[in-house]
Image (tube, rainbow, N blue to C red; front, side, top):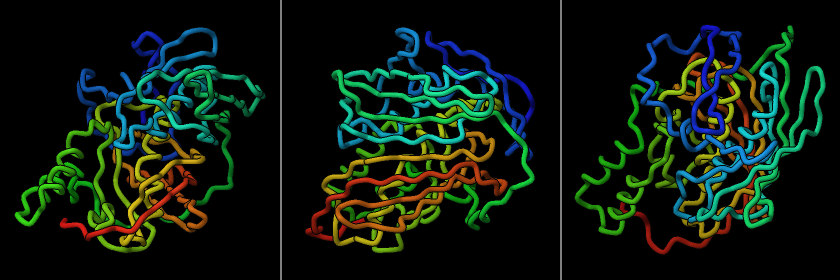
Length: 334
């Protein structure tokens, strides 16, 4: 990865350069970047905050899930953007810890209030409140560190899976399902609604049937993910914010995979934690490994690992949420 400058959205919608990070490993790909007008909507819109005052920002919504509540990954990503704006260029996010305390209202914008909790020589901590209707909907602690080399380095091995070029995207899979003559009208309607969603992430499930929970299986799934559009090399602050957005997608749903006889009628995240280990490109394919080690008391716990294509562990995350279910009346026709 070359040592150039990659843009971070500023408060007017333009982009500002920040000092880039030289990775400890080789770049994921040497492909030439696409035109700048193909920039990811995650950069130009979703994670682009408006500055209202010192340490006070406003964010707007882009994609609203069918639950009609704000997507948690967007709030986490925007909170990390707000925190990163108050940090020197030589500090980079290494962990975030978030609590969802109220459901987000998709009809109004979100205010982000940043508190400078600590500034040290090696570490800095920021506290961020995401506020709607005068009340916090998320409380986030973000810790940043100056890069420090160490002889202590190890990681788990990356799972062996098919490469993304050998798999279909969710949209391609849906079109394949829609071509099946046995589909009911309700099933077709549901699939067409999925196609209409403007999710700014590309997803390629390693096991499509397991991804959509068509039958019972282990509480584990793997899929390749990347931001849609071009972001570019360098600015790890921005790539961490995008990865935080991606990390909330489909993670908690892993808890439901063993229970095909039940469907969720209420799902809500309670907390979300994430640790950043290495440099990466969030607009290039990363393998997302999700698993759920426990469920009970109407709650479930899920862990996630984001892997670079070259086998380097980029980030780890954990999430707990409320999951209330009811029996399925009839089996899916898919």
